[in-house]
Amino acid sequence: MNEQAKQDRVRIFDTTLRDGEQAPGCSMTLREKLKVARALRDMRVDIIEAGFAAASPGDFESVREVANSIKGVTICSLARCHEGDIEKSARALEPAARKRIHVFVATSEIHRKFKLEMARDEIVRRAVEAVRLARQACDDVEFSPEDASRTEPEYLTEIVTAVVEAGATTVNIPDTVGYAMPEQFQALFEHLRDTVPGVENVVLSAHCHDDLGLSVANSLAAVVGGARQIECTVNGIGERAGNCSLEEVVMALKVRADYFGLDTGIETTGLYPASRLVSSVTGMHTPRNKAIVGQNAFAHEAGIHQHGMLKHAETYEIMRPESVGMHRSNLVLGKHSGRHAFRDRTRQLGFELSEDQLNRAFIEFKKLADRKKELFDADIEALIVHKDTAAMGPWRLRELRINTGGSTLAVAAVRLEHDSGEQRDEAAVGDGPIDATFKALERATEMSVELIHFDVRSVTTGEDAQGEATVTARWGDSSYRGRAVSTDIVEAGAKALLEVLNRALRAKARLDSGKAAKRGPRRRLGP
Ligand code: KIV
Ligand code: ZN
Image (tube, rainbow, N blue to C red):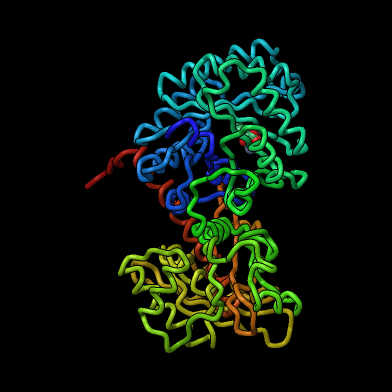
């Protein structure tokens, strides 16, 4: 890429799998992370921050697996300015064709005094050593002075100058606590461009949090100030109020190319499918009025708007829903629709299914079409997204009967089938149908969990709409999430809890087999 093209392009650094996943309630399994990483690659983001390799063995494993299976995009791991963190990141990134190590240390006075208990020059030394070490493992090194927006500007110049000399190739300026105002943040970038020698040889980046609802505005202001990388997450998920939302910042740069004169290279038709995927795997639903990807983002209810739209769409629409991968035809298929129509629709919704996956999804689709008059896009998405996890055993729900008999007490009877073929029937009395069902399932699986969160929402509108249930529960030190959809919300809740129980049972089996392996073969007494 020539110098001009470099300056005309804003790199998109996605941190859904790191800063996003770090937020409470947003944790993802490895399979889910890989799915999200594939969607990000297909959308052509420039960098995927796959995790914080040193945070835990699970994080190490996910960075390594993303590095191993996702090609054609730079894979990044976060690291503190510690030798051990940097080594772990380098090891986890080994399989990546294109890799980046992202080192960070806090620089603001409040962090120096109360968190690090370190003096300014000590922090500079540590940052320089970390960047040098990371450069030995990797040509592409990013440095972040955490809480940069609350750091003294002249100190920021000092530390950024030092890390640029040490070999950092990208310098990221985080608004860690979402405190900055757009004009101030723009000025901070201009200040760095004016005061840091050699700054023209590195990419300046913005990383904004949304505590005051300004993360997108601040990221765009940073771009005006000279940033050429934006760090963001799908649906804006992240710590506290979240991070800058990828879809919003990308569409702002695209729709207002007349103002910014910059390109991102993102395939924007992937935005809506990626948003649906992330909300479905995390259980963090986007509000209906969320910009770009909310259900109402392109809905025109007011008569005067509809009138204008019918005459000329641009009267009330600054971008087409198709440009973000959202298709207008809301009423899609019914029980007479064939396999071809179903395949076309799944493709339009951004799913590439193998023949086998398509066949299985089509069978479920036909079953659903028998229960529901009209099938909407969201029904089909839910069906495909939830199919994968529902297929994982060992237990499957074969029958569920509820008797409420007009009182607050309810009786639930369940029949489960195990992978081994064993069948179990159990019943329980509870305070309402959900409570009774959950008790019966725990009895049948002989697994007990502590419920943290239970949520049901309607996938579409109408009396026969499917309910999507999300259950989060704790077993031991870990929490597990399950999701399921059904036109019957108690059944959706039962299937979601069963997914949690299955996950916990699989974890228990792994733990037991680990313990048995450590003990070694038992010595037999007698014959
Ligand atoms: O918000 C923040 O400061 C961060 C850094 C680690 C980049 O996430
Ligand atoms: Zn952050």
